Image (cartoon, rainbow, N blue to C red):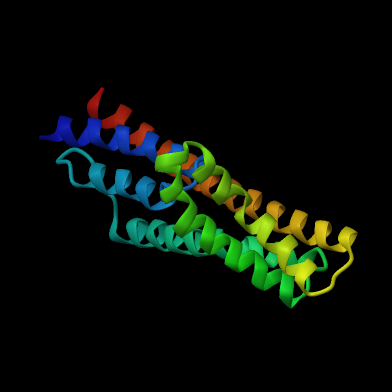
Length: 172
């Protein structure tokens, strides 16, 4: 059974890394699941403190991944209209456009990537913001998205380091 959990953890870790880059797969929680799978083996055991800390980090990064694009919009001079547009674009990108991806291929992924960007721009324009400021606000939203992706990748690589180190130590 340990080997089934081991191979499952490796596969789940790879899926987590893919999910960090490709929206639609919750990469950070999937990565945490890989850690739990190894913990359930007879050969590897993590302390409760380690699991709680990595779980809290997972939850915080998951929430920040949705908040940072909105914050980026504000930081780059976005108004409330741009912030609302970024939020609406993010929601549409997360909930609606991935469903279209089944039918329209990569449109769903592009929708998630561009939802906050396009939403911030449209929100700014509807609020009467000049074009150059609207583009700047949208760019801030996109930078926020990239920052969220970076946080997820760093988390996955750190957890991946522990997983690989412990696999080598326990199984080889």
